[in-house]
Image 1 (cartoon, helix red, strand yellow):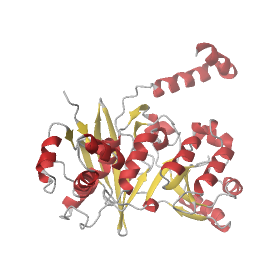
Image 2 (cartoon, helix red, strand yellow; image 1 turned 180 degrees about the vertical axis):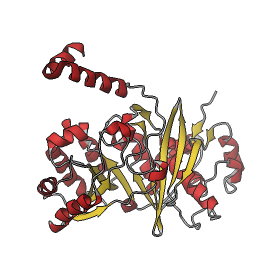
Image 3 (cartoon, one colour; image 1 turned 45 degrees about the vertical axis):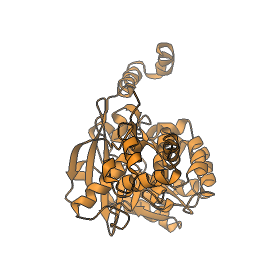
Image 4 (cartoon, helix red, strand yellow; image 1 turned 90 degrees about the vertical axis):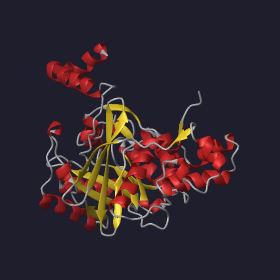
Length: 385
């Protein structure tokens, strides 16, 4: 039997190749792209300018299938969150944030996350698997056309676009799912699909240095780096990936990326944690750290969840921290807290994840060992494996 190809899984070059294997010319791939990504079509018989012979080939060989919606929540501030079923007991979350004439979609790239930052509830769920291209772009495809239908806006390139910006800041570390993430980015940017500007698509990373360099060559979009600490000792605790790619190495990677980036600055995201990373001294350390990296800071009020053991910095402390950075000439913004009544705010996306890598179990085991054996913890772990 011929395998059914989900056309949402195919970036432009892959769709052209697939059509070629069907004996079709490249312009047919562009037609398909427009029907799927500009008109939201999923039924081939509705694609009226395709040759009948092509529509017949597509039946039984292809489909247009996004992950099904399990839940759809609307916040009092207009933020909307979808829970998508990505199969085998996993679900991921996607958030739409309307604001001052633009609409930003926060997209997930993994079911769970293996980075396990202390302040992020996604990481506490453990990691299950990477999402496929169709599961990533399917979030944008579903959200765009659901929003249009809710506003009675026609599909197609002449219809008013509801999603003007995309941020790869949902569940997961995008650069640890590199191939599907880049394929989805290419669809977002392609003029026959969503036609988004590179400046309006932002990828957020916790600092996977080799993949940052690769992205700068393959598909440079705006870059945001989850920084959260001004020195290695603190960042090792908050962002465990820092032990592999410490701050000096990360700053050099940011400098290299800027040579190819669509914007002339890196956005540093910084979660404000009460008594942990929010002092004026921390702010001054940050100024020294980023002195050679053109940047702006986005300060994020922490959204507490029970497992973190952390608290949000008080608003006056956040403002004072911001002022230290601004007095040094660094553009600094404080992110609005949006959608927290539906757990859609930054750091709150948890979805429903089957922890097949046993992150939670292993983390709990290490904590028990550390408590039990104290200073001999390192030797015990080494022996026990």
